[in-house]
Image (cartoon, rainbow, N blue to C red; front, side, top):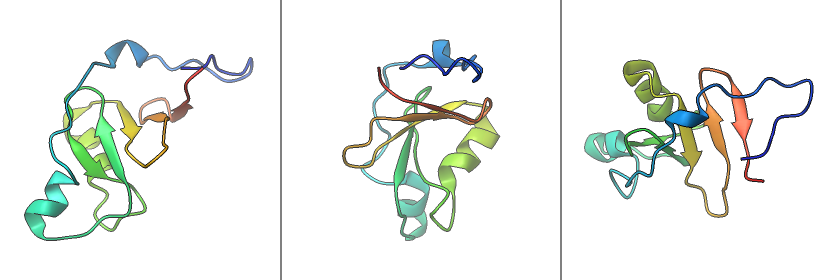
Length: 94
């Protein structure tokens, strides 16, 4: 992950990132409900796959609120960024 800009605070949760295995090939909650999604997010604590905030159900954010897990990674094709919900910071590779 890149260092933050000088006036941007550092993410205090990067030490919670783990090597995880995605829980499903799509948003696990949408798959169970027969719903669709726009983009997918991978929880970097437990591997939960949820849909993004552009999706109707916003399951990745719901997972964060329920679990307290702070960081998700984009599963979009070519996506290489992570988001910390707690610090509201975009984390990009160096």
